[in-house]
Length: 477
Ligand code: 4AD
Ligand code: MG
Image (tube, helix red, strand yellow):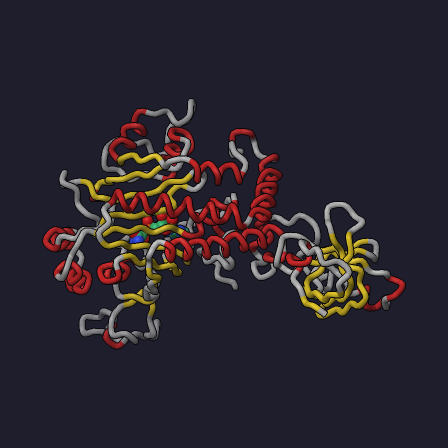
């Protein structure tokens, strides 16, 4: 007797075989038809029970959510919408789910309701589809880098350096918060802390990845990163996964080429390998949008939108050109931007980014050569002395999905930058070593994995594309 997944059985041509499957009940109709799902696919397999042959007490336990072991014969289905079904000969309830208590009933639950049940929401079609897409995307990412000669590098999670110099970091300490050891001047004595210094959870693996790129050539990290920014938005998490490639001998143009090719490649992979789940998510989005005013609906169905990104060049625009567009535009007949762009040098808000992508260029945009003042210390200074070789990739419906740059490889200029920003050079001694010994042009970028999953699934809130979201006031699970 063979044990198979529902995905395998649904495409099986091998009828009349006796099989055993295990899964969870989605619905049980007319005391006769069990729709069983095991997570291997979006679909359920219909299991037909002859209720006269089974104990009433057993059938009473066949409720939505219960775990079953079913043995039976695979036969051609008489019903519509499925090719095969199982004639059940034996049925065992492995685990009950009391309908009075089990929250995931066969009806429409709001995403907000399901967020409160993050441990159970994966049992719905929507979340199972999202998480299969997420898993496929991660595989595609590793696959892409492997095929392109990159080594996978593991950046440390606990670190003594602040890569971005922006946003709050999560402190890691073993000191007694209420009664920490103090220095003579009353400040906390971190020498007595576990690592003998102040440490944090990493905000980015970039600085360490640079060290590895300067030996292995092309490397990438793909791991969790942490930011204690108190921004309660649908695009920010306190713990998110970032993909950070770093390449020796790459300038900014090569970096942009790689980023574009990489994103197109992983989306293509997902279009081929997650067709069923994407079709389901597209329909879900369509149903959800029916209730919205026309202006807020997306103009393209999900799969068409993904294909559009794959088939069209990203528009490359300098920050200076973007500012000219934004200064002169009327985003909306009635409304101005909340933060109108007055002068060159101001940082872009998400309303500006979204205007450029969604209204002006109507395609993904790569903005490059930002003012040095609004970007991190490690970005390479341009000849004009005021812009840096930075690039951000902006996506429709998402905003910034990638942030990257060519790195400053000249020791003297980097040292000056560090000094100007008031950063203690001693903190970055090892980073400066990379410029002292065999320095070379190099570049890299960071892609926010959840923002990519948001785009690929058409979901609207980042909390719905990571298994257990970490946001302010929210670490229940
Ligand atoms: O632009 P960021 O801050 O860039 C860096 O950290 C660089 N060190 C990366 C590099 O060059 N290796 O972050 C990169 C990306 C953003 O574009 C965004 O997609 C995502 O990470 N991101 C977040 N995603 C979810 N929640 C947050 N709080 C995020 N902050 C950044
Ligand atoms: Mg950024």
